[in-house]
Image (cartoon, rainbow, N blue to C red; front, side):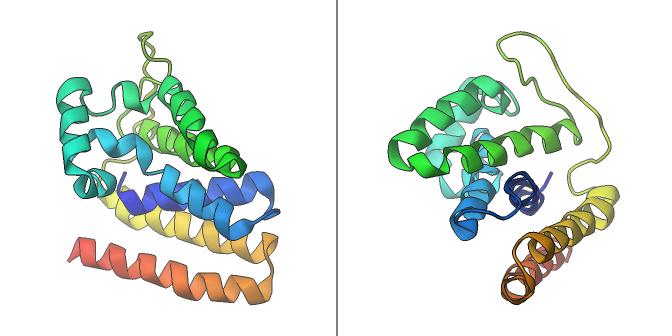
Length: 176
């Protein structure tokens, strides 16, 4: 999955789980950012590109979609987040786990690492037709629906205009 679909998946999961209650901006931001964290094991990912030393080292030692793409890594990430942002642990975990679920749909993950238990439901391939033209629009529409239903009409308009259209622009720039 592309990085923007992980962000959309994390924010959607957070909005659905919390029904838009609590500090919505902080929670969805934490979920969206945390949805990128498992890909720190790839220097080609959005997060890995911005943290090249960490991502290259992690990739060399652990490989992509290895231990970092597991519930154990999610637990360690939750401990890290709880030390700096204790109010954001749940949204951070929602984002992290949403990443694992989406990667299971686009190749597979080993969520119970170090046990050998792979989960793979290959519905999409990264940058494939189904991801770009089915998953991305579906995630965008679902986010718009969740924002509209859980947050309200006025706030939804601002979020949709500023967020979704920026995502559309990013998707288009990746296709071109």
